[in-house]
Image (spheres, rainbow, N blue to C red):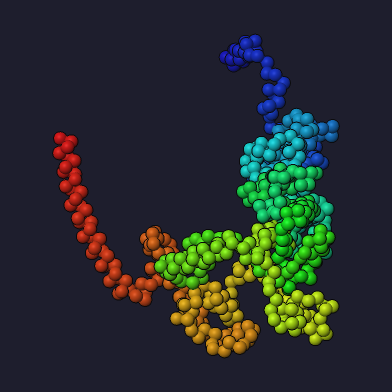
Length: 598
């Protein structure tokens, strides 16, 4: 008993001595290392300014089960308030603990000013994996008031482009945000829509009439975005539309918004400004050709003359007193381009020509180029005039030489004459011909648009993920596609002579129907086997360093093992002889090297 009393006295003495020597810890330092406390759950409240609004119910129930079994493994962080404590970090653990029936929860109490609290909450929430994208975008937008995008990226461990995409997503109007929240719209598509001003987004949203249609949204984006590398005006010109300035520094240029369309790609997302610059460029062009006495040739054929944009171009030329003619009324010379082997190969990429044949094609093309260049250089001596060819959709131009095409004999009844005359100048019979020709062209355009829309819709579906075997219709479609797009003209004649039969009078619909009726899987397999023999890589690639070639080599061994073995043996024998000679040479060199060292 006496010994214990002495020990206590000694400890008190040491404590006093220690208190004299040890410097008091400042208040700020004590707050930086808070103690974990067990707080009553009823005294804790969620922060009404918390940026995170959504919690997955199923995930919460799973966490609640874990907490009921193991307890809260990581304390929450709170700050004091008049009514108790407000959560700074850990609202999900708090909610799950209440679901688990806990009455207390481990917590660290910290002192924060309000703006600092919100910043801490945002960063803590953004570091989680289950943050809803539009809430994440709003939170990052808040941080943008305090930090640059690259600083936010470092704090969150994200790429700067990721942060810039989320910043842009914050500009998405509520209607589209709902589609992102419920998972119908991808984040990348949401970012693409957010590139547009709110008014433009609202027009796009209203056109959907309350039904999400991804393929329609993509088409609307395509029709409202413009590749600035193909603009008809100088994107560095800040005087063309002074209020808008130069495109290279414009905030509506995607290249200035975090490369949202790819590395540095310049894409304009402000339709009105782009069209305004196009129009001003066109009006300047009209004045220039008039001043310089050039012939302006809008690229309009007889089939497209009634289109609204073409009619507008012709009307503006008429106002400036410029004569306009359709391209089918003119002989037009474009400056010839020097042919290259790369261009020849691209032109004949669907055919199987040897290098020697391609070289012959190049020689022929060079001869033609020389003749065309001679005609171009002497065009003015043969009745041509300097002109500019104008594309009426883009207003892009290129220099040309033009001459009015000479009239053919035959009077007003000739086909060419009929094409040139206006409807009011034609007889009723001729008007019928013109009307029918025009209607046929419109049907072709409608059919093209219809087919494109069908293809776009199908590409949006899960068609390619279907697990059922190919149907006959699918095999027919693949067979015809392979035949037309992947087998050269000479190979078609040599290996697939009677592919469609010999009746060329059938329509495409009838031809496909008959092909399907006589279709055999052997045809499909034969096409695939033919392509398999043509898809291998020759040259530096071989069956030991190329996956395609290796798989082909293995497949062929089941059919031609003896022939392949014969080739392998011949090469192996040659290789062994060569390696033996090399080995002998190396031995001699090693002996010589040893002599030099000694």
